[in-house]
Length: 262
Ligand SMILES: [Zn+2]
Figure 1 (cartoon, rainbow, N blue to C red):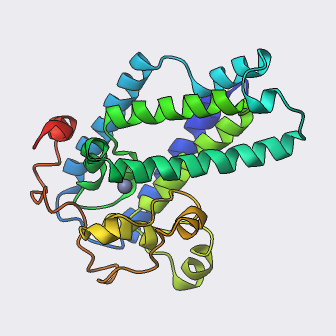
Figure 2 (cartoon, protein in one colour):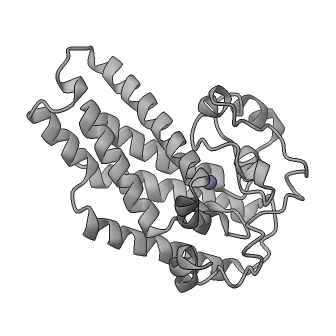
């Protein structure tokens, strides 16, 4: 835990660069707008979200987990279980929590206003995996803070979860199409790019499916799994019907004010 930032940034930038390189060489779909325009807006939003998160929730999740451990706060800090069991159960619980949080952001109109910033992107690529409104990022941190403290989730589980979730979000938003021989077995466990693009379809029944960012288990278990869309992966209409203008949602300012628009 001594070099937490190093581990996080190391994984983040490595996966980011690898996915962006692969999608630049072998893109699955063509972007309807210039990539540089979208990237400026999407990466601008990442920067804005990081600043807002740091100002509103200045303490890190792992620091809270360490504090909880030292002060016996939360379920797992009050009972004795082998540490590998606690770590595995913690990872599963956090992942289910994120699945339901995502589903709730689709279901509750006020939350959808925030989450639609992510879905309004007219093209899906690695940068889309980072495109979230700052308020959604802050709400997500608060939800995780409550879960980590109530359950006494150990710091190492928090770190593994954050690195994995972040990495998989970059992976499954990438504008690539894995060869069938890899994609077929992989989609039995993980949310692949083709499966996640269904979640970015303009068709509401398709948007409201495949909520998982990592494994497909929770979508299967809670009945939201879709293995194919009506249109093929290359013809799928991506984005939101209510934001048809690709340019209009490709500037940082328009993304920041999008939740407050009618
Ligand atoms: Zn979504």
